[in-house]
Amino acid sequence: MELASLIIAMLVTGAVGGVLAGLLGIGGGIVIVPMLELALGFVGVDESVRMHIAVATSLATIVPTSISSARAHHRRDAIDVAVVRYWSPSIAVGAVAGIVIAANVGGDFLAAVFAVVAFAAAAKMMLPLDDITLTDDIPRGVFGPVIPVTVGAVSTLMGIGGGTLSVPAMTFCGRPIHRAVGTAALLGLVIALPATIGYMVSGWGNPLLPAASLGFVSLPGFLLIAATTVLFAPLGAKIAHALPRRQLGALFGLFLLVVAVRMAYRALF
Image 1 (cartoon, rainbow, N blue to C red):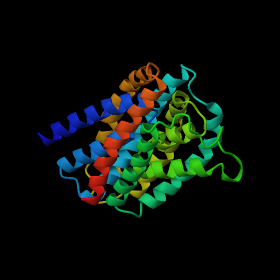
Image 2 (cartoon, rainbow, N blue to C red):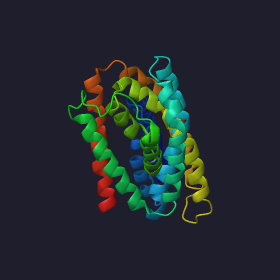
Image 3 (cartoon, rainbow, N blue to C red):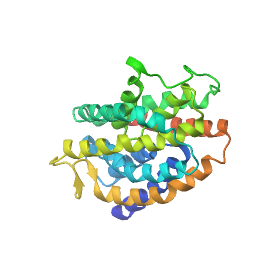
Image 4 (cartoon, one colour):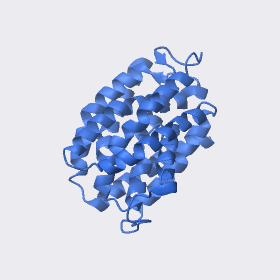
């Protein structure tokens, strides 16, 4: 019964995560992580590794999901290729840094990071700040890598594809919300690939991990969630381009707020 419930939870998680990937430009991780962490607790996985497994497995599923979502947005010419080229090296560096940090902290720390960032991003997207920008373009020069390095590192700690951070960052830098969402979908792949490999290596041989795990990555979780997210990501992209700019931003923020409350409770209690 517990195994059947876990399978159902993973399939539902993948479907919801796929729609959100296309709808909001996120890799789906911001819903996959909390739901998978709950499911792992239900089947008795040790609390000290549950968050690491949820984060790592989420990142693994983001690889195919980002490809599916990015292709859907590319067909609508909603990806800023110049930003992807400029940010990608720094994002990859940040992802490696995030792995180093994650290997040396506990699950409560990861949950706390998740909650704080989700709260901040929710506030930005829900408040009427559409016309407020910090700059007219993506910062370059000496401080240019600061944003993408931060996106890569924090996203790796949270198990997300980066959209939670990169979408608000790009809108603050003058990018329209729909174009920011599309660009974030492709940037998720840049984060997920090195981060997944890093979590596999850092968790290798841990005796607390459940069966069929590659390091911190759960193979059953990856296969079930990845399959459904790929199927549902194009649906989310279709919905995104049918919604007004303000409505899309508010929907993004509301979802982040709900998740932030859940993860804050996980970290504190």
